[in-house]
Length: 553
Image (cartoon, rainbow, N blue to C red):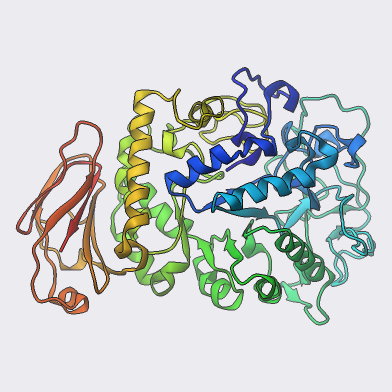
């Protein structure tokens, strides 16, 4: 969830509105009633973005939080990835900003009482252009405080510098509030996406500063890890701090931009405190997957470049899109560690499913992709808030300009989610009939995968290679999930037309499942409204367009 939006129930909002004008989640909005509603839907963890204090255009200087310069802040709310105090939470999330940490702790207690867990968004690669912690424990030194700014790179520095330069605001930056004094940064620090320029572009991560983990980026990425870089120690201390405060896991933003050696150093120290703490890496380089799991120690990695991209192309009906892209994921990328892959069809970076930039005018074309994402292997599934109601994200919020994504940077609302909140009833009472149908699909899907031992623990077998020439292999994907006690055949039709074919179960699959014969029987179908459920007669399958059928053997 984008935390500052999740609990906001203000219906009257305006472009570039302040927190007071448009509303913002308060920790108290994560009520026991709301948590129980989420638990009932089948969720186990709440992944929260934007709790750690980040740069903002709101003024909380009266509560120990320095005022940020609006020219290095994206949006009225600010970027949740421009952290200005790793030891604090955003003051605007609290009813009483001076007691914000107490209010956070009370919320975390409620999460645990509801038998849910909280995953915090941890941002290790970059922080706000001006960092100052007013909540750091005794003895902690702020990032950059002891840096030698005359050196472009030093293993002892927390930042990278451009000596002899002054930072220049990118062309095109026009904050929605008045600029009364110039922003001064001498020397200029390197921006978060490794841009060694005193004037990054407006499309760069100009509001952030790159953290230095002992890698000399300007000289062939030479590493200086002995002695342990100061940034390693500081960041490990942050993770330890939040773990001791009861956080159950960390989704690590742009984890692959931080050397894997750091994770191998930090994660064991955290897990020594709590072995159950979960580490999730946002990572986009499949060649590094194995490294970040088995060397770095991550529990789960984003499966974006592989499974998400392949499924998305199919659902968008792109020319050349084929289910072979799905087979390639397990054959070439993550087949032997698929249980470590976190899968999704929406997150804060990607376009919403029910938008012109994705499913266009046919939300229900996403059924086969969602079923496959949830059931192909036994790793975790992530659902982004509002996804289960078909959120369109088409409003112009402010810094975010109706780009088919829910804003990260503005104080605003998420329309469908807000109507599910229904004034704190959490019953979906204000959803439309069509949105309730979407919600029912997600509820049924989650109920199935959460109750199925075959999906939770079963092995996987790709059936594509064994099908005959009449099988529509480019648009239909069939696979087995099985344990010693049960077997499921799952068939997903990404095509815009119905299909009728015979399914082949090869001898190798029977041997691996430990059976000699079988009879196919439909368990359930996931189909668009008014479409026919799938049918099975012997080995003959009839499946509607944009649907999935679950069959027992």
